[in-house]
Image (cartoon, rainbow over all chains, first blue to last red; front, side, top):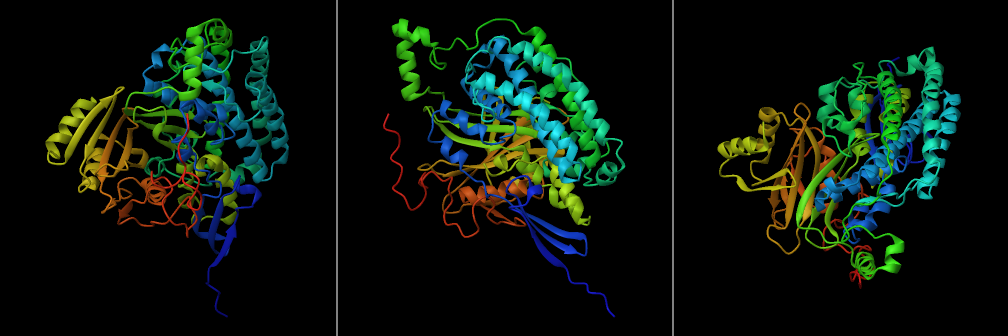
Length: 393
Length: 160
């Protein structure tokens, strides 16, 4: 009897728990082997780039929360840095603002990596880790709530500064949490790294060489696990990252297991950075001295006619920028998050293009799974750490 | 190598192609004609080591001629430098050669540019819509596309 050699096409998603949102994959299978994988995206497209062309620069900040909703402050940071660069006020950002921005974005990195680890482990069968990670993530969400009033969509950074200063006592709370974090990372490692099932599901799975990864545009931890020593925080520093002493974890395994280890190491490095930033944090202004751009403090608005005028002008008209174009990339938890802004001299961006790391990283999925087992597709989706909010924008 | 040196070498090799060089906030933007864009990009990758195409997008300058601009944000992972190449595209002839042969990552970026901006990429391996549904009409990021969708009253702009 001749073997049946026809391939079978199956649909995975967009409503599938392990596609991390609304990703649809059309998989052509030969038995259990994936012959072809075709991602379909766009189910969450909200037209953020189009919307931003009709909003003032400040009004776009809340939209950026909804890109990578697991790391909202990183998106806020990328956007405000881009606008500050466009305005040419990068050097005028007060030191306290820089430090708090670093603390909050590194907490965001921890938050994003915790969700990644929780879901990735859950997808390939380790349920306990999910509960452990969400326990720690809850602490970060509480910190979010205390600084910004929101647990997920923070909208905390402003062009030229911050929405508000840290509430009293929060520094100590952040320190206590962050100091407990290395022990928790040990805990996750204890559950997974030496676990034979975990190793079988991750070692040698979803391999991609450094050349192929760069060609397809993969950035962030996924690229560093392929042996490329590149981190924007160290190599093109922004927000005063040059002041901090931290290592960039690099591994050469190119597989899911090494991507897992790189991200765990990054969590330890984030802890180091936050502790240094807390040590260096001094009292000071939380807004740059740029009255035509930054909203004045409320008490000035009621007491001082000049501040009242600035307040009125900024709220009703927004601030204008000189014509020009800039690109600002930051090291978001998932890779390089870039904002390309074109200004035409008005109070609205003429064009804003977002370079979302997940969008580009997902493009590498077909070559990582084709010729491999169907079960590995789940592991690879997890290891790429995609968020559909920023893929579809 | 500094941006100026790179621009000088580009000028020497593609003197008839360069339209404009702008420096703004420390970033260099080189505007080139679109005909030899694949050769230019290959040259940037092979001779200057711009091995990562960070981003590719289209811009609509409605009312100006040429109407569109295709923008390539390049990055060199070894020297950590950025540079930007732009190529103008006419409205009547809205197409440009694909650079997905130079950087594989251009594939999806170009699909997105086609989908949202309506610029065709010649010789692209898989030029389908990517974010909008396959049967969608129009290209939403164009400036003459209404913000609130095709079947609504056009957006009148903010009153303030």
